[in-house]
Amino acid sequence: MVKKVYRNKGSKDNIVISIAGAHGVGKSTIYQLLKKKLAHDFKFKFFPERYVKIPPFPFGSSNKQIAFRSEIHFLQQLTKRNQSVMNYDERYNGRIIVLDRTPTCILVYSKSLNLKEKDYKLILDMYNSVNWREDYVIYLSAKPETILKRIRQRGSLEKIRKEWNEYEKEYLLKILSYYNQFLLSKKEKDKVLILDTDINTPEQVIQEVESIISNLTNYSFQKRVKHPGQTDLLKFLK
Image (cartoon, rainbow, N blue to C red; front, side, top):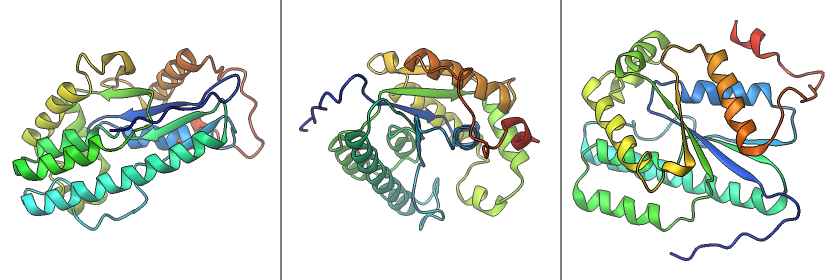
């Protein structure tokens, strides 16, 4: 794979941070809350995990053919996002780019779904062909029991959650195991920061994420000037 060499864009390069974690841990909730809080701060740019709101195939299906199609679709969505990130990276300096989900999740979920070996190999080859733009990963962790409890508390979209096997503990345990293998491996550990969310409220998790971002970028959330129309996080959480 040909690696792109990023040009020196002046005093400070952009930094790309993914917020990662298994389904139900609160990853997308934290991403959305942080995005709401920083919506009017030009220093930040947020990219969602996918551009199609309702995927054409259910994620987590026990049907291997459907599961393979869903992972190919998700990989296509993340590849499209990666190109958007790289285009943005070429245009701006000194920005903090935040991603909902890490590209590594494709390998995690594809393995957890027990795809046919040739199908997984195709996904792996496609994954390796992309020059993923990612500097650090904030990995949200929690006990399996906590994650399953959070999934049950969501209430909405129950039919979809059943189709995606989100209530299956064995499936969740596989996912957590493969996150440990692919994301928390010796090769990747220097760029991964683990944040235990087990007993924390969303507000506390946001504060921890802000602290991590500050340490990585020297950005001061305390000195940040709010836009008059910006939503207050505490009001949003109520």
